[in-house]
Image (cartoon, rainbow, N blue to C red):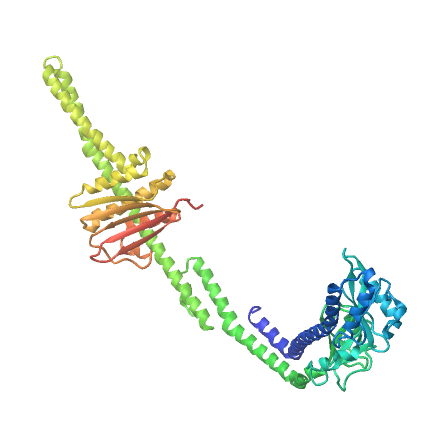
Length: 563
């Protein structure tokens, strides 16, 4: 219930009460990012206008270095430069480190009369900066300057020129920026005084009292903020520093111009909230009736299956189709587990019966074969003892017969031992034991058995080698007893991570089962034993067989035995 009804209810109520706010937030981010980008572009354009003047001065300063003994030539060059193709509002002047012309006999230009501007400019350049811009004078004039160096690269003067703010065409430049019907673009100095604006009827005479002004002027990076104008109107204020003279580009836009089209939909908020409540109630009812209760019933059925009641999942629990599909899948799993348990019971019964039959066979052979041979051996020894003194040759013949009987008894005992435990496996190893096993199977009438080894052979843990040996032995016994084959093959592959055992034949084959539990129902207890041995060591068995097309049993066993 928590993962279905509650999240849906919260989402619907959240959409109902925060839809307008979310839209406003998205619109604010969009408009603010747009205004910030426009402010950066405008600031870069203003900066380019200033750098044009500074670049012209820098070229002149590099081409004609300042020399104390060549002041006359320098004055001639500066006179030829004039107003630098209209970039400056007066003559370009070569100044010393104190901001004074080297030779004052020729008079000072009018713009040099404002000592504060020139001295501040000189101090800035002499501190090592490549360019400087002075504050704006009352007449709308400011000075730009670049350092002049001697042959040793030492700064000992500056090249300065006046620039009129009106000559920059700032209003035309700023008016090109489109920021809505009531948006205004400002260029301000470091103190927040308006230098130019985008010739809008909404432009203010002063930005004093603007709540976002101080943060914009102090910022060294472009940004945007939501603030209030001096008249209390909510505004978005984007700003970007020009980078020279402390100028800033500000873009002011009324907030209601952005969100106005959306605010009229706020009257539908109660209806949306009521709809969310209705949908939540319906969803809650549907979840309880079609999801929660059927899942509870299915959980109780699963608990009954865990206690052995495999019929518990047969009854439908209702609800949505997915839950009914889950019940049917659980019922199929319970049926398979039940069939597998029955198969295991039949397999255990068959194994137990086979063990008893094997014990009877061994007991019968020991009694009828070995015991009788030992009795006959004892009689031959007694007869040899009786005639040993009177008929030595007859006694020797008797003893020769005894030796033959002993060899037969010994071979019989060895056969019993091989049936109980493969001695070649312990003495010689896994592969020699398989060779002996396939050689014995090859001695069967009308059957040819071939052993193939692939990969780098290695010794395995003794219990794993015994399990692999028993798997091949059981598979070959199936071939000998049931396949009616003329050829069989055994393949042992030492792969990187698995030992792969494959036993195949060209016999009559059979219908391969789709599920493992079908092995016991069809009486394939030998194959089931192979499967159980493989499972015990974390392996898998696969069967490829079809009527008339032979059979191939493949087992993959990992080298590392699982815990």
